[in-house]
Image 1 (cartoon, one colour):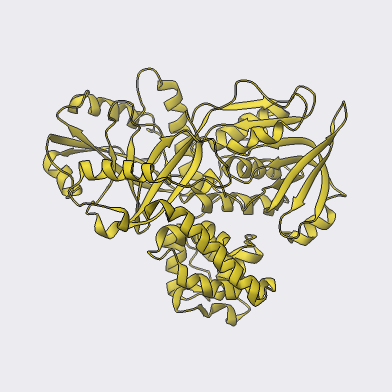
Image 2 (cartoon, helix red, strand yellow; image 1 turned 90 degrees about the vertical axis):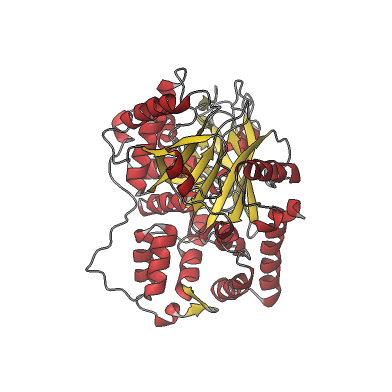
Amino acid sequence: MRKTRDEILSNIGNNRYDIIIIGGGVIGATIAFKTSRVGLSTLLLEKHDFSFGASSRTGKILNGGYNDLTTKNIISTIYKVRERNNLIYKSSASQTGILYPIYEYGKSGIFGQELKSNFYDLLSIFSQIKRHTSHSRNSTLECLPDLINNYVIAGIEYNEGMLDDSRYVMELLLKAEENGADILNYAEVKIFEYNNKEIQKVILSDKITGRIYETSAKDIVISAGAWGHELSSTLPNGSFDNKVQYIKASHLIVNSDIIHINKSVVLPKIKDRPNVFLMKWKDTLIIGPTIKKYNGNLDCIYATSDEIEYLLDIYNTYFSSIVNKNHIITTQSGMMPVNSTDIKIHSHPNYRLFLVEGGNFTLSSLIAVKTLLKIYGKPHKWFSVGKFMNNKIDKKIEWVLKKETIDFLINYFNSVDLAIRLNEFCKNDSSLLVNVGLDERIPRGLIKYFVEVEHALHLDDIMIRRLRFILTENDCGTLLAEHIAEEMANILGWNQKRIEWEIKRYRTEIKRARVSLY
């Protein structure tokens, strides 16, 4: 049975956990899921909302590494493809075709791309991943009507996974909770108390109330991405050598109605420029990423005007339908390792503390297993073959949700599990089936569910990382946000001043993501 936030915090000082995980992104959530599944008492702490950082700011691709495949990195590609296939199966993620146009001036030509694609297919021979499709010049241009066709001679369509990043993280955390884990967002680790032998206490701050708590564990894992090294460095000998190098990656989110492409597409590399993807996701098109060094505040990462101009220039070089800043819904930026296969698991020389660096969604399960093997050994414990996300509807379910809501939850989130849980949540209270505002997709019960089950504590938690409306609605969900704030107020006891503050906080986040557009 899940515990409330107050229940966890009231007992946190009395518990000595088997493991404390600091960081609520995809790596931390995967580790929490695996440790709780085998019965280890687990506490996960995240100083912002779950998947606040890079784990909600990806390009939504489960990438096996097709574009980077060369004779020099075959082994790493084999690992990435295996992990991608594994994750697609366990999460019931959808597959998506990505079209790679072949140009007359390209190095490998049609034969080289065909050879590469056949080898890439071979790596997934025992999975359900579809084989690549070869397109003629005409077929390529039919799929991409706006593509400037000079020098296009053919196309290769290969298949990858498509995943809603923050929804996946949330599903992992809910499963960890079902297994008995305690999870807390807005719980910032401030400092460690230690002696010569062990870390005696972890001191944390509840960022909602400002209260300070202390707890302890046999083992501590820091899986906070680019933030991790800063925290480990508060301990003596906690500044590790051979660190993973992180860079800033930015994407544009554009209304897909103005761009006439029928497939997701990856544009060929030019010199040292990384591949730029145009990914069809929900009702939008995600363009990116840019790659840029960043030494600023990791809690405030936003796209700059030069990054936006760079992506727009690339798009407008290849496509005839001109896109400008007025067509951009919003932007997203996050930190990512320079090389996704560069994974480091540092162990402290004096204490049972481990710092995990590197990786991405595709490699998240592999990183979690490697981390747990380093801490505990016993490889048989950490591997599992079962699905943890379901996309099949049981005909025996007695639905109380409206059809519009069911279709929205399944088609938009690609999650039958979410629809089933919400249906059960609303079963005994018909008032929860009433629409929020005029939006027939969103019942009041969904907002209550996000707050009470998925730990949403601020308006932007729902708008950005639960509903994703900051990315998918043309107005970033601004009008609906006011109604959702009212619903949250009824649940969390906010007064009118707090409601106005939450709305202002969300609108400020929208402006920050769009400031470089003006």
